[in-house]
Image (tube, rainbow, N blue to C red; front, top):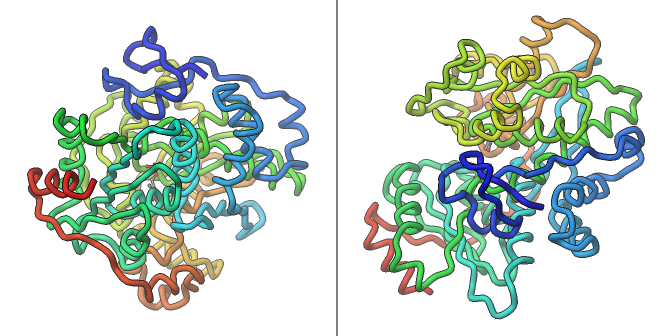
Length: 435
Ligand SMILES: *Cc1c(COP(=O)(O)O)cnc(C)c1O
C-alpha cells in the first residue's frame, strides 16, 4: 500500500511510514494511492462471512502485502474481537451499535487496530514506542484500552481535570501496566497544546520515540470501514439490500470511513451526517464555502469540532466535486434542546436509551426519511454506550441504563493518575524523569 498527501500527490510513503508519521509534514492527510475495487462476488455473498472475515478481506485489499496475509489475519482477529450488531427499532429503522468494545465507544475499532499495527511494525530491538494522546473523553479510553498490554508500547494520556465523566475517567486511570494518565489542571485545548509542543520539541526527539494516536491516522480509518460492510451483511441476511447510513459526526472520521467503504464498492444508497451546532460541514454542503469556526460546547461533546480534520480526506475521495458529494451525503444540524427531545423520544417510542451523539444521528435519519421517501433500511450509528454520558441524559432515563459488567468493576479499582499544571516544562520534566 502506498499513500499520498492530500497536499501533494507526488509525495508517496509506505503504509508503515504513514502509520508512524500520522500526518505528512506538509500537514495534508494520507490517502491510499489506489482504492481497490472489491471482488463483486464478495459483496454478493457477504452475508456468508463473519465480521472478522470481512475485516480481513477489506484490510488485505487495502494494505496488500505490507503485512503478509497470515500475520494480518491474526492481527485483525486480535483487534476486532467484539461485535457490532444491527438492531431494528421499527420496520425500516435500525441502529448499528458500535459500543461493544472495551471503552464502549466506536473508537475502539480504530484504536485496537492501530495499536496492533504499530506493535507489528516496531522491530525487535526498537526502543519503547511512546504514544502521547490528549483527550476530551472518548479517544483516551479507546487508546488506553487499545494499547493496554501491547508489547513495546507505552501510552501517556492527558485529560482535563473534572471535565470527563466518571466512566471515562475510570477507563483512563485504572489500567496500570503500560498506560499512565495525567490529570491536567486545564482544558482539553491545554492538553492538546502540551502534546503538540512535545512533538515539536527537538530535545525530546532524541530521548523518546514519540508517536501520536491521532484520530487522523490511516490505521484508525481503515478498521472503521469494517463495520459498514458488516452492517450491510447483517441486513442482507434478512433480505434487505437498500441502506442509508446516518452518522453522528464531529471530526468526520467515522463517516469518512463509510465513504471509503462506498468507494471500495459497498452499495450504500446514501449517507447522512448529523452534527450538533458545530455545523461547518452542513454549511459547506449548503453554500459551497468551507468556513471553519471555533468549536462550541454541546451535550454531544465528542462532536464539538469547528474544523473537522477528516473533511479534507472526504473532499479528496470525491475529487473536490461538490455535486457528487451532495448526491452522496446529506447533513443536518441540531441544538442541545433538540438532542434532549430526541433522547426522550427514543426512550418513549422504542424503550431505547441513547447517548446524545447517537440521538443526533437518529434525528438526522428521521429528517432524511421525511425529505427523501423511499424503501430502504435507515440505519443510524450508535457511537457510544449511554453510561459514558450521565450528565447529558435525563435522570429518569439514565436510571434505566444497564451498566456493562466491565464498567461496574471499574469503579472498584484504584485510580492511578498524576496531577500536573498547564506548564510545558513540568510536563517535559515528567516525561524525562519517567522514561
Ligand atoms: C469521536 C466520537 C464521535 C465523532 O466521530 P468523528 O469520527 O470524529 O466524526 C461521535 N460520537 C462519539 C461518542 C465519539 O466518541
